[in-house]
Length: 524
View (cartoon, rainbow, N blue to C red):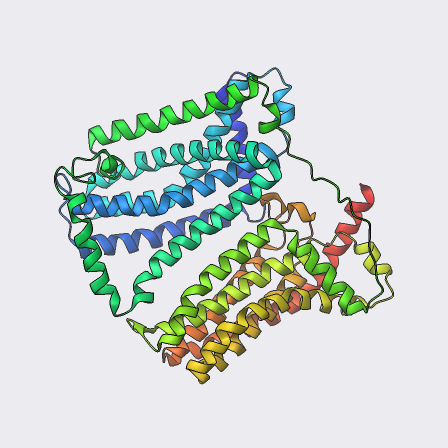
């Protein structure tokens, strides 16, 4: 393999991606998790295809093509936001574009490798759905579903190319630092919009059926023969590519490849025309012109205000808070309207469980900032305040905003169903407190700017897994017990046992992490 060629650079990108992927988990465990996930999806899709009993021996019916097209349209914004985030990472967070730009390597090869590396990451992600879908198709006698592989490749190339072009536009408009913030907000908005769209039938309740029928009747002319969205429309070519339609496959793959080539050429042209700053160096933050103001206050007030001010400066966290608030909208809409159910699950109880899970997840992010992002361990150690008190104040700074956000839905829930409201309040308190404590015991120290980057996500993998599992256990307890499932009462003992195990194992890790952080900073 020739040094400096496109294949050589792509191999290097794959090596970096694998290093990031296995940073916190052994390759064997990663393979085991991948096999388990793919096996589960195979079984689920196999059961779904068997139940639908679709005849895919010939050309699929237009109704099936339309459904596939709508699913692709719903999932593509997520792929696009992933492409934007990966583009920001490879251009700005990695910090190697200046070195590559000053090397003897051709600029066209450099940018082509970056486009293909982002597309490769997207393709691997898309394979999580493509592999089970194609395998289930073979098991049910529908080999046409092997088109999931070329469709995943075309989607990855398209999303990566558009993501890089959008990133370049955002950087030119806002600067590199704000472009990263804007991409994260776009991801939050896209995820929240999909969630709200999926909740529309639940929010409309009894009106959903009639409203949906009226809406379908109004749109029928568009889907008729000769209409803008009729069977012969080019809009459905990507959906037909899933079923190995030759023309659709050729157009979809060639279009995606042409877009990738155009993106690499655009990036190269921007670089050669003097726009190097837009694709290499990030914008520096302007220093605050105001003076430093300090007024003596109590230790509690000082620590809380200091932590909250640092939290408000974190753009990623602000986008995540926005997303959590979007997820609370269905709960605020459904609660005043009375009980309802989806199958055996009580709708109100399910949304209450979701509130508990969201609160626990948000506390994890807040505690990661106030504990893992602490950059003044030596000053805190020398402060005339016990470390235990400082840690309690840091936890309070992470817990108080989440509890404040949860007050309104908890009040509505207690007004509508007092018993469920009390259960949710207890579970939310335990879920947030246990999540905060586990993060305190597994701090994963890093620079504040690197906390939410892939290379900044450190810590014990077992503790990370338990930390992510606890909100699910507490939220599931509320959802299932609120729906009348007596078996769910075993979930709290499991969650408490996992928290206790984290206490026995975690404090030693936290002390070692603090010593490690001090040593790293002493050497730098």
